[in-house]
Image 1 (cartoon, rainbow over the protein chains, first blue to last red):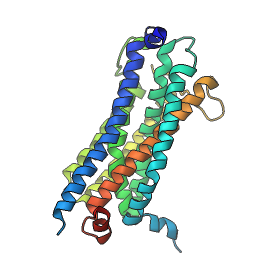
Image 2 (cartoon, rainbow over the protein chains, first blue to last red):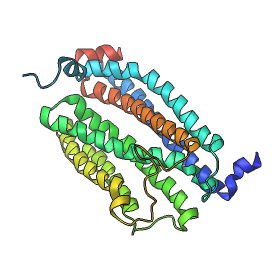
Image 3 (cartoon, chains in turn blue, red):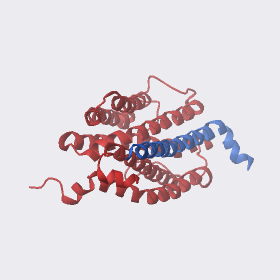
Image 4 (tube, rainbow over the protein chains, first blue to last red):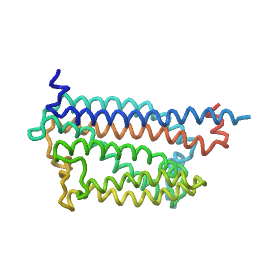
Length: 48
Length: 246
């Protein structure tokens, strides 16, 4: 198991890459979801 | 003669596109989870270490899919851009706007993972003398340009047309990104995937192809969400939009 996390000495680079990927995926999910919440709130407030 | 088939014309109407984008989301989400899950776990666990780069090469399962999508998305934006400029189809205009932030994020991911790969293998995070690296950075500026231009022009439809034009310029740059490793002598290695003869073992190939397909589905998913938001905002005065938020 330690070998797996160590990645043959490339741990920083390999896990750094997958971490960056996770961050980009999370941002892509969160950004439009938060925008939708704000948008619906705003549009509902404008409705007569 | 009808240039655009009837069903395609119907699909491009904002209320229909809003509904179709929403209906596609669960399926795109499911496909993303399955394909990205297999791609990343396969890449980290199932695939063997590389004979030269050891475990360091496992960055490929993030880097190559992100790079492929960074190129494909600007091409898709340029395609939509041509439709927006010639036929003034609203959906095409909205697509150009909505794909840009997704493309920018994946281009950033490509550059970051490329640097993390370059440091241990080449001894440097970055080189200004490599055509692949510099043209990918220019691609990021193109995406940023589309985002900035859209925010700078007050009339949304005029902004979308300006962005379409920039997307077409960006697509030409993406051709340079793709063929830079063939045209110039670059530090960056040549293509890993080729039609009819990839230079990679099948234990590495399948997870890589799955991760690429998964990231494509994921891009579709988040662009669909952005499309729905943008359509709702632009059509907020119309009855269908009022019904959708009710």
